Length: 403
Image (cartoon, rainbow, N blue to C red):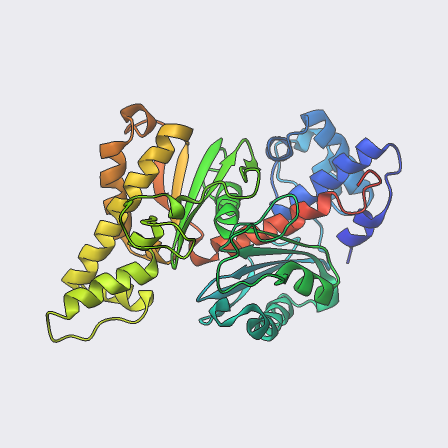
């Protein structure tokens, strides 16, 4: 089979710019097959540049010849069968998800492995299991570890976009010196790329969701903690130190509970997993039923029509909707997607929708407009899928003469 890695490793044959554009188009097709018009939109290259690059890729044997013909511009550009595999890893507090995909396959044809134990035990204790999960996912694609071309990593923490390191304060379970990208990248022999998991959830939803043409996308991850990823014009909005979108640390109660970030009354202290479990346990203390110990138990009980758990999740949605209303007033997004564990309950979306329409400017969230509030289409794999996209995007600069 052909190899994407071989072409990426070559220097441009005509001009540096032409070589870079060809690489960008190749990686865009690896991320998601699409028409030349789609690829031009996603890469922000001209259609003429994309057409030239597709013809060159066909000559190199990486794209079927028919896809390079001008009359096929409206047809989907795909890769021929290749050995190369892309990997995405989501290192959650209580869960780890790994996805792997041979790059000629559709985005939803991934091999996935999931662990119910996350990095709450500490990175170095989790590392051996993460390696095993990656190997298992790769083997399920029919390929080997040496076929991995790219690796992206999602973490529920702030990442400095300039240094790819944790942005202070480095919150538990992570510690100064922890380097998941360095550790896993060196083990696989590839350049690993890391980012905040909400950012990558947003990237996945814009890339693979039904509203891929949305210009401004907000993805909210509501699980152990709360964070938001923001995409504007195909680019993730990270901010100077990678702290953009940290809605979980917006102050909603100046006299409230102290948060692990050192602040007081953060949104996370009100609707994070620990807070919701505590609310249910407090209500249970007045009755005979035992309180839940995990967020999964709260969600399961709500699904089974437990009145206390249903109320707690609905109220969490209302609190989240109030925060999102402020975000909508500032950004006026086309699309707000709610993901994470809490999104498994539609009660969250119902409460969120109530407060959003109560507190946001009517024009920002008007019914019948282009605006939409929805649950994640990719579910619990969104962050890992976004990490896979990030890893492939990170290959754009690898091997370029100017980098």
